[in-house]
Image (cartoon, rainbow over all chains, first blue to last red; front, side):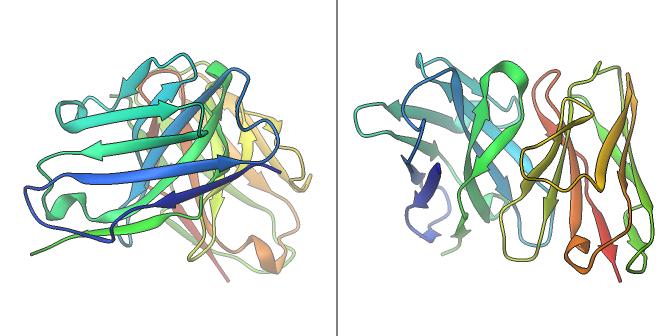
Length: 120
Length: 105
């Protein structure tokens, strides 16, 4: 059973950089044609795709966030990361990591999510 | 961006009912439409992918249909555990989600 686990600070200062990691473990966690994805959900609101990284290292970003995003993949540790620069209160959300199966674009495994609050 | 509009935004139903949730895309997305169920405090779970394919382990009471711009999630014989929020998501282009439909008792 594949498992994903997010980690990182729960509180970030405005204008600083939000940094999260997602550790992947279990069956088929480290091979195959998968994309590794970040999705967020502001409290009480809907879901927003942030971006993804393919096992080759190619990245795909939400156009509305692209200038502030960096997603990296460490296949040796089987973990991937998210950095969002110049954060504001609008970046306060529950951040999920997930797996996308190939080019199909659906997310079949999710982490439990980690709440990040942007506040001074 | 492709916009997805779900209707209704909320829905009240009873155990045993059949319900349908609509998802309309702002332009054609072929069959690149997926459905998720989210319960309070939990991550979303994949229900349907590619418009009508049932994810492994998901009850056959769930079904999806549609193509192009209009899609429907149908839940037959509602069970207590089905009361949750449902999201559609398109994977035709830069992914987007619908705003959600809250299914309440």
